[in-house]
Image (cartoon, rainbow, N blue to C red; front, side, top):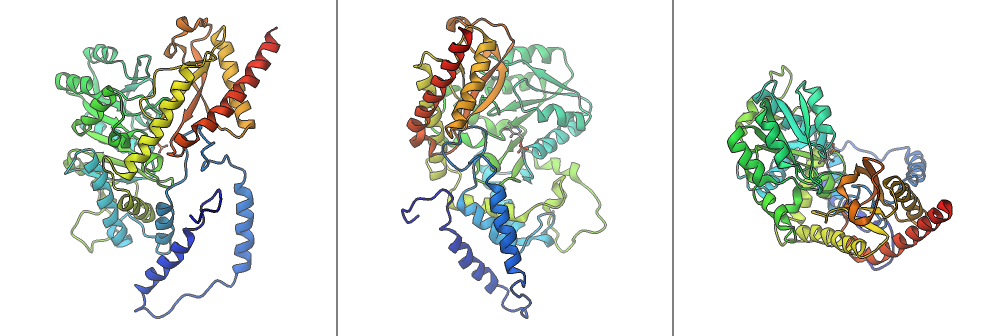
Length: 463
Ligand SMILES: *Cc1c(COP(=O)(O)O)cnc(C)c1O
């Protein structure tokens, strides 16, 4: 903030101290109750030990961490969350957190607004898993015993959660871009028994976007419930550099029946922040319960009466509200600009990979995730090389990820690679920080060095 170099931003801490004073002032009418803890020294000792322990992590905050879906929250989210902890509201019920419940409703309504829903039913959850569980639970209540289908690249949580809900589940094959194969879905629908189709808007492995326009056409004909798992990709509708096909999908998000989005993935939030939205608020009837012990000071429906989870962190809602206040979810805004930068980084990496004979890229990124394989004689060798490059890059402080994908996602014939295995271990990079765009040259230098080392070792070994 003052131009001095740092890794972990600390300047904003003084804002927290000031805001805490302001928060305290609001309770000045009460007789004093607090004292500074007598055990400050012991707390300090423990905290220092914690800092030591936390060194045992990959540096998720740094642009050279370009592996999995991980990044720290925005400073405003971190500070607002911390500030709320002095109150520690529980958004189970209005009595547990009036202000934070109101802020949750406002923040969730803004997310719904981003999807074009002026009216909705929705709330925050502990994450995408719980949010999808609620969406599939409601789907199951509306279509008892009918099948849930999702693409074979959908998050594994759908199969598992369907099991929890005792709903039958089936996978639908994908095309080479990792998107649900619409013809395969149509053939499956012809056989009957499908109650719910899950469209993944940004798959976890590749960021592939299942095509909504043809799925919506199929819904007309077959009458299934359409759920969009946009846990990762939900915010990308704000970006103006999408491929035409992805654009068409985002433009029709308002027509699905339910949506899941994870503010703790691309919404700059600390973990513990997912969101489920229903287009028809009437599904609230399934949540009905008669709690003998909760909160009847208000006539309004409590958020806790519309959520499967009971206690939920009010601080999470406060952090989300603060973030969206600073960075509204609008096209052309600063937040949209951040996503545009992550996508630009992914496109730039993809271009370099395509121009380099040592690599075979999968289909072009739809969001900000890039997947590629080293070129080798056989798929098994390419997989081995991918693991080596991954390790060599990590030695040089560049953290990538590995993914196991169907080998047919790559144009092996054109690359002259023999398919001796059905799946390929490939390299994957989630470029989810805006800084990745500026850092791409440096990332490439390291990737190049890591690849040289891995290929050199490979050649020596195979001679
Ligand atoms: C991350 C993710 C999930 C699971 O969400 P959690 O927040 O990790 O529980 C589900 N679906 C998709 C597409 C995801 O990317």
